[in-house]
Length: 265
Image 1 (tube, helix red, strand yellow):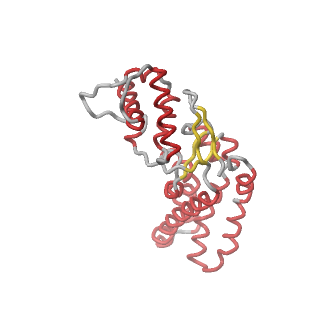
Image 2 (cartoon, one colour):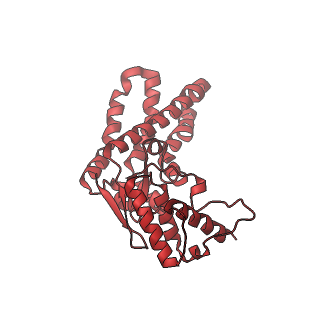
Image 3 (cartoon, helix red, strand yellow):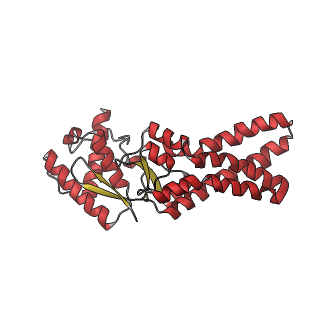
C-alpha cells in the first residue's frame, strides 16, 4: 500500500496510508446508495403523487433531486471534514498533500473536476426509470459506470492514487478511521469558566502546527501512530521548553485545549 509522507514543522515525518482502491469503490457505491434512496423517496412520495404538468415536474426534479445530488460531495466534504457518508463508513477521508484539511478552494477544484459528481446527477433519473419502466434502466446504468473510467485510470496510474480532481486540487484520499468529534478539533469551544491553560507556550505554534497535531490525533491508533505521537510530543516539549509527565496522547490533547482557550480570550 502506498503512503504519503508529510514532514511536520518539528522535522518529524508522518506517514499516511493512501486509501486502497476497493475502499474508494465501496465508498462510492455507498454514496450512490444514499443519493438513490433520497431520489427514490422524492420521486415516489412527492413528485409522482403530485401529478404536475411535465414542464413543472422537470423543474421540480431539478430543484429537489438533481441539484442536491450534484452538490452532495462538495457539501459533505466541506462540512464533515473531508468525508461523505460513504467515506465515513469505510474509514477514508480527503486531505491535502501537506497533511492538513483541504481549503475551500481545494474542495471546489476537486469537486469541479470530480467526474463522480456528474455521475451523481444521473442517479436520480436511473431511479426514476426503475420506477416507471423496470429493466429499461440497464443501458443508463452502464453509461453511468463509464463516466468513472477516466478517474479509475488516473487512480491506477498515479503514485498516490489520485483521481483528476485530486491532482488539480492538490489533495489525496487517506485510509484513516477518523473518530474525532468537535471536541477534538482546534475549533473546540471551552465551556469551563475557570479553565486555566497549562501550557501557554502553545501560542508559539502556528495554525499549521496545530492542524498537524489535530490530524495526528484523528488517526486510528496503531503502533506506528503511537510512535509518531511520542516523537512529536518530545520535539514540541524540546522546542517550547515544556516540562510534562503527561502521556503523549494526553499532552497533545491538552495543547489543543490550551490553544483554543487562549485564542478565544
